[in-house]
Length: 215
Image 1 (spheres, rainbow, N blue to C red):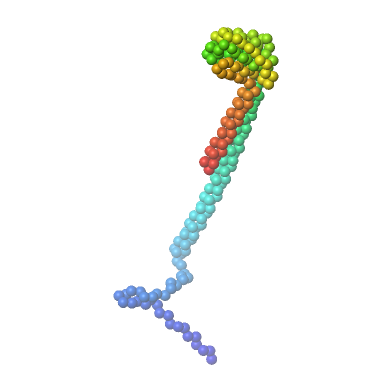
Image 2 (image 1 turned 60 degrees about the vertical axis):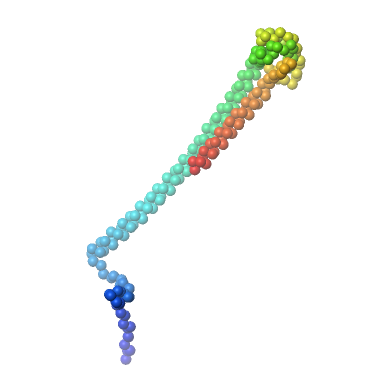
């Protein structure tokens, strides 16, 4: 004979003094739903799914926009580098052209820098009694042009010439009692090239700082 299965009696809601609920049974899982409840659950699930899909789409769109921004930033950096390289090449070409033009001018008019300098130094050399001019193998044409330029500048003293083989064509040194002046075409171009290089390097530095700040 099968023994009966005994089930412990479980109390439902227990009320205390004043009707206060002391304990209550756990809510039972609902097994049956009305058609209206089923429709509400379906709409809630659909809305949750749509919100999740929209969120994923927005995240994908944001990632795509960030990728485009990164690509654009890299493109702008490359464009800046190309512009700088073009500018540097233009500066180098301008320097080479200037050197060739200056060399041709000095070949045809080697006395021009010296006569121009004596004219500019008129106030300094006018009270002097002697000028000593250094040049590389000074020609008679150079001497004649220098003496004429000194006279036009107001100098009435003696002009002496000295050979200095280390000076390039067109280069010279003028010495008088209270001072001296010199000109070396090669040194001028070296100083100009140095100044242009510093300007280009400064531009690169500022551009790189600007890119970092934008990020």
